[in-house]
Image (cartoon, rainbow, N blue to C red):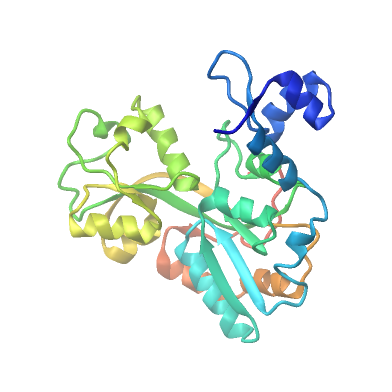
Length: 303
């Protein structure tokens, strides 16, 4: 077990005053626990947190160079994003584009470590009025450039004909429904847990025995095969697999990019794909997407 530091000890370790320690816990994600009634700080995690905020870390610059033929997007899984990457490689065959399915939070953390060019994220903020910015501010040294990829429709994926008669999240209360879910750190899981709490249900209890799946398509296939009765996902998957769909909300799906690398040729070429008719045609074929703002910069507080 990691050695635990008191507030005074962590202040001495970081060479700051104790009041500043509380501010770092609240606003900058300094690892801490209050299980004993007072703040304690795992020393190993504090050291890692400090190292992750090192500016000009040479370990980051070696991974993805300025002229690298490898183009990496990491973060939230999305069908339209996959097709956009295919369009990018067809238009720019000198690049090899790869996607890391890490979930929204994992994508932001990969961006911080220099492991990707672009992080794909749709993390709803606590006030439910904006996306991604608060999470990025907690994880990144500097605010990133944020570009809208799309808006998309989230909801529940249901078997054809909706045999269990699910018409709201509240219908999950007191039933023997088999439920699939997504991995922690994904925007879809975060949204679904918001919906469960709003319906007066415990996310922990509702998802206690649920299979944890990596992609929207995996959830849809489990529903289609009858192994589960429902799961959270996007309308595009329901349309693709001819499932029933209970719409819950539209969300904003963004691309986060380090400002220092924003004008790299590969990044600008990729962003340019969203202005092409082929991209918009793919969105129409999939359904459940709004690409009217795709490619535009997004700022905090902007709808």
